[in-house]
Length: 203
Length: 95
Image 1 (tube, rainbow over the protein chains, first blue to last red):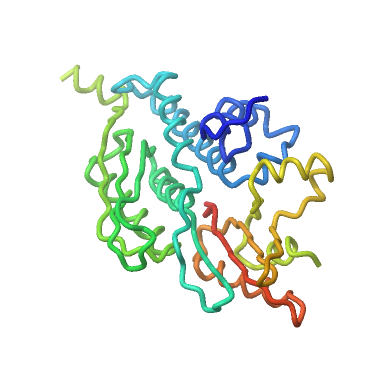
Image 2 (cartoon, chains in turn blue, red):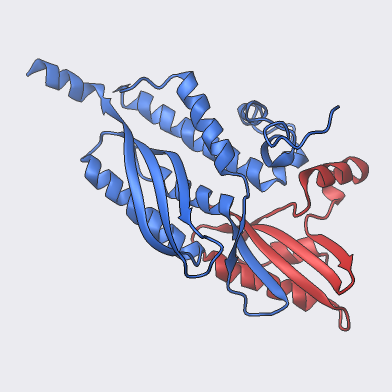
């Protein structure tokens, strides 16, 4: 086997396992257990995101949603590819250590997953992408969090976005020492329940 | 008690991940068996032992506090007279 430094070729978390491999692993109930996946934080983060995306897809079905635009396999694959990039550990964001012998940090990937999970936790929302903008390595330096979301229109879009913003802020505040100056939420897709569409066309 | 067990025993730690590069962990697992490979990395250098732990913490906790608790637990386990530094990396925050 040829050795390479290409991150995509090295798989998620450098395990050699691809997104498709992890998807298949999830489909078969994570059995038989693969230690290289089960002990790798990036693989576990991607598996958790896959489960949340799957739950969102089931929610679309349950709401009999007319997807606007359609949620096809290509869009799901693109979303998973984005998540695959975001779960990479990236830089170690420093945390204050009370002991000079100890270095404490939270990975960039962990923070991005935290942001994504906080957004996904809002009913009818799935996060498309998220990023940390600013010098995350400099303690006290202002950082902005930016994320895009898709929503099932259960309520006013503004309220959904505000709920996402609040949850992300609470999560980042609890688990990092970043100086968050702003959280920018952009709604990129709106999926309207078919019932409302029907009501709209009947009037 | 080994370092993996010490880290896992810290309240708020929900997962322990391999601190070594995946290829190294995989090679060790092939040789020793998946259950016999330590996930906390310990390396010797000129200044003593360098210990690295990669953890997942609970979402209802505070990652900085749990990371500090883990580092304290590890350092408490280092024998007297042994110089050691610890890096605790929070790699995931779990629901």
